[in-house]
Length: 258
Image (cartoon, rainbow, N blue to C red; front, side):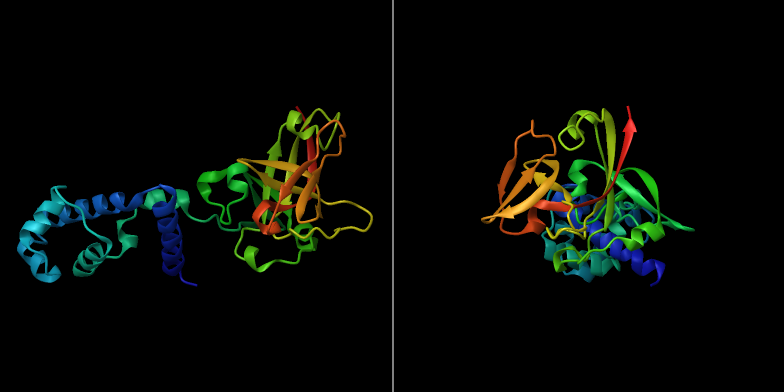
């Protein structure tokens, strides 16, 4: 796949996030178009009359837009872009695009980089550069051996992420460890079937605006989350689909003394 195609795909993904998650917004796109129009007019490459002829808008309409006295509806914006030979991609700030572009899988020899992300980003289908705290290296041979039956809803998700849980939050599952815990999470694995016979799986699960790390089982249409330390309460979550609440199965646990 060519680099320009990849960049355009990143731009489309960024644009979707921009419009619906507030990174840029429709107003921001119009401001970018105004800057481009002013640049071309100042350089003598375009006149209001020429633009009016190409778009079918009146010169007054165009002048009011450039001077922020009116905006453009989506269809009008599209006509303006076509008249200028531009696409929405051309209006995006390359620096913002780089920040919000999907993080590519980086392979270095026998190792693969896995992003360390925060709780809010762990449940996002696509991991973007802005949300990555650091990268951890895992052996490819180890990751390749991890089995998963990927549900259709997760096929486009970045598979592995790492989460860091401080000692206090980790106490429910690793009592007495007194250590920060780093979890390798397989987000393609959301089945409740035991990964290893006779051992319970540990899952990262969405709850309200945060995450819980617990054993999980389905009982009467609800997901029951159990801690290893009985001093912590069990949590019952009504669920329609496991994919809605389970971030992924914990594939590896690493304890680091604080």
